[in-house]
Image (cartoon, rainbow, N blue to C red; front, side):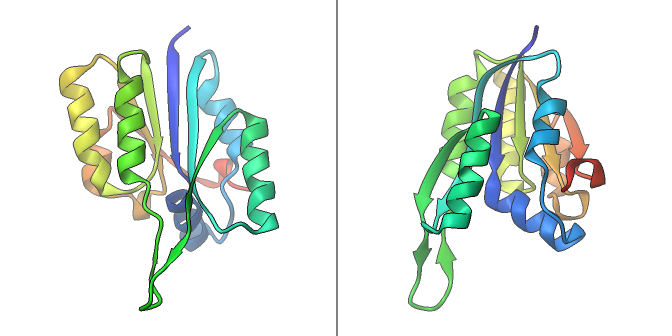
Length: 157
C-alpha cells in the first residue's frame, strides 16, 4: 500500500470553507477518502490555541480521527490584528516526511506552499495532492501540485 503523509492548515481550511460554503469541513469524510487503501505514516493538523472549550473539543475530534494536533498560541497585536502562522512549521514537517512517503497531502489554499511542492517535485518521487476550496486556492499552488482535489459539498458537514 502507498504510504501517505497528511498536513492540514486548519485555519486556512476553516476560513475558506466558511467563506465559500458557510459550512464546516468534514474531517471524517476527508480521512476516509485520503487514506483509502493507503498506509498513514503521519497526519498533522496545525492550529492556533485560543484555549477555549469548543476549540479543545474540536482538537480532540481531530486526535480521535488520527491526527497529531500541533498548536501555536494565539497572538493578538496591539493594532487589533492577530498572528498564528504555521507555514514554516508545516514546511519543515513536509520536508521531513517527503523521503518516507509515496504521497504528500496538503490541505491549504495558501500560495506560499507552491515553492515547497515545486521542491518536492524536483527532489523526490512523492506525489503531491492539494485539497482546497477552488475559489480561494492560489492558482500557483494548484499548478504546483501533482493533483488538486477541490473541496466540495461531499467534504463538508
